[in-house]
Length: 121
View 1 (tube, one colour):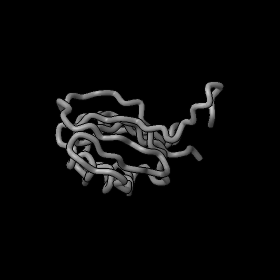
View 2: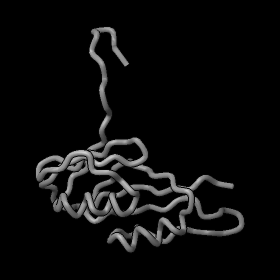
View 3: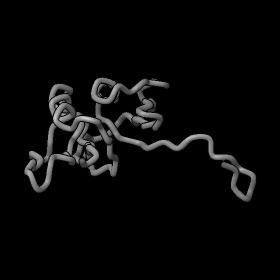
């Protein structure tokens, strides 16, 4: 899209900090089937469902809310995969007849918090 000044936006990236950039790439590759499009210690990029996530090495590994949300087709399977890939839940999600399982609050291997959701119904 070209703005009034004639500049064109080429790509939008969301950036995560990682204490271990290779471990972070491995997590998102294994967890969500991401494809690494650029890789080096200071800056890497991984594409998931058409979205680019930049991974900046040198993070402190502190818990940080990212605002990222990944919608999946099977949240129970996603939760199992999260644990297999070295991530964890901030708390176990509730699943009841009145409120079927549709949201999990997650943390990756680098302390980045994100949501994993599933469409209701």
